Length: 353
Image (cartoon, rainbow, N blue to C red; front, side):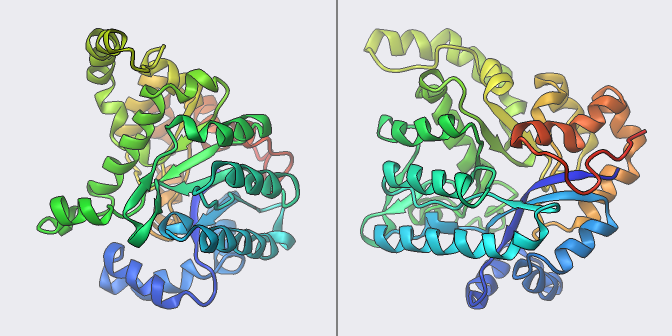
């Protein structure tokens, strides 16, 4: 399929090679680290050539983990976000028919985060923001700031005014969680478990703490076929509706006003990033509809060859799984075109049969 859109595609700024080596030691197999080190530091060279070769028409790039969320010093986080967004804009400026970006933001101060998001969208032409889970703050980063609290309503107000999405991306477990849960279970750090656990907590917090009730047009994206949440829809919904809401009413506590299905059909999109399973995709589409799913790769943690190879080489089976060629096109590019308000881009109107 030509004209595919991908939107969980990471980069690291020049001069961060030692940091990238540390990330590679956690998330990349030893024999694959040379490739990863080369690709994470490339935005507009090999990435574009691979996109051409595998039918990707438009790529949204974003700062890799832990991003600005790993910077606990407020002033440094804000400065780094500003400089990184300018750097990314410079990297993609000659490829805007092929590339866009999500802003990185310091989330120490909701007002400042909203101002930087507004600058990135209105002045730099970015398509929204990507945050690496919660913001580390305080001495030694021991305070964790989640965006499901009323203090962040000022940020959500700007996000909805701009009508752009927020991508909530995983990050490594916090030091406390790492020490207590994963120190003796290091094979579960990252995609096997910890990433999904972190983003699931944050996403369900947004729902259960009423963010989407206060901001009904807010748009959130999560990756990896939903970070395990869709497979627990029935149980979550049963407990929200039959147990947690009555308890919240009894105690005068905020609780989501609608069902979890409503929020996933109205406020949340799911990408296929790093989860190239047709049977999983079929389940997700059956639960929330093809219009809530977006194709993505998760490059360079996953390869474009593998992600696009699945989507293109297994096209017949995928079309059957998602309900036909029209839904295949929706997931491959049209949902993202609408969500990101994209105009014409490379191969944006290529036929899909």
